[in-house]
Length: 279
Image 1 (cartoon, rainbow, N blue to C red):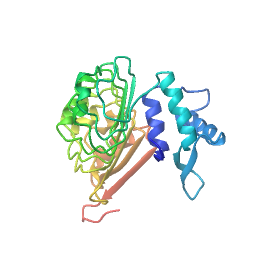
Image 2: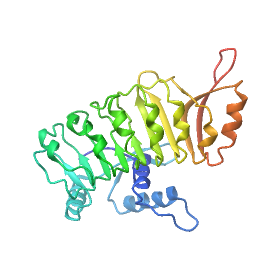
Image 3: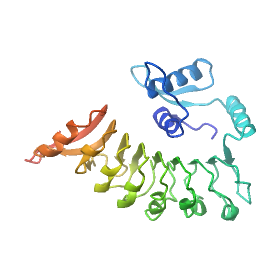
Image 4: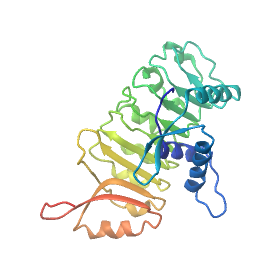
């Protein structure tokens, strides 16, 4: 949407889920994606919005005039379908990527064919009830980004767990308070983003997601809330990033299991000592 702030890491992981980035000799996927960002920036197609003290650009925006060109080209090539007003019987038969930028989809979504959609993004907090109630129909979905969607509730997560091909699940800013045990059905999931949610724990079945690479968490109401690392985490051989989890210092077995995660690159944990102190 116009003036929307784009988080670089969020967009990168969406690219990975949709296989829009390919490895090149001597470079990781993330390094290739960073080159894409650098080129877009050098061509003034995007502009920096937030820059860290070391000069790293973390957030971007697209200039209004450039956005018009991008949207026009995307629609022309049927790369993405936008819902910017009330949906009333839109032709969804050939839709592969659906971007919902409306507060009111209307009842027209009830008759839409959603089975070919590979990517679904929402950019408004409300008005998605019809869509969320039909999540189980998105059988080919690879990328689901529901950031800040306040219509998402715990019961919808049971539908999400039937999306077997899902690679990216973004729940940042939603009001969910629990993840179902059935989340282990998402055997292709690579990224699970849980920033600014209301979770207190994650199910032990999370460790069954052996392709999961990134799990990031933050409790919106309690900034000091960390999630307990589930048992048998050694099964998650692909794990590269684990953010805001707690490790009890006397839990030697779990510490050994973490040592087996040879792909781990970013590890942010709270160390809890037996006397109650924390670090």
